[in-house]
Amino acid sequence: MSSPFKDAHLLAPLPLRLAVGAVFIWTGFYQLFRDVEVVGQSFGSLGIPLPTVTAVVVGIIEFFGGLAVILGLWTRWVSLLQVIILIVAIWLVKLPGGLIGGSADRELLLLAGALALFLLGSGRLSIDRTIRKKI
Image: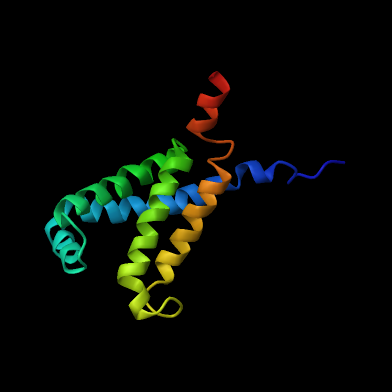
């Protein structure tokens, strides 16, 4: 008798994609459509070059990248960009406050999720898989 969980690993990325994508959509939406000037000023205070432009670019990656991750579209590439954004955010903003028990808990979880998606790919229920099957 075969296990009902025999192919579960093929579906495992789906809940991870939904969670990570949703958080990035919310963060990107807020950054792009509510407070891009404030985020740009914050980036400037951290010494990030072209702070407002960088805030817009990061917001686009977060918002549209979150959508792409949920859909399972370009999951590995988008997740890699998200990993880079999170490493920079943790390094510049969160590290001084402490990683564990400080203010970096959310970012560390997102980093782990995005890194897992980069390594695993989008899984069975994804646009990436549909595209691969047609090629």
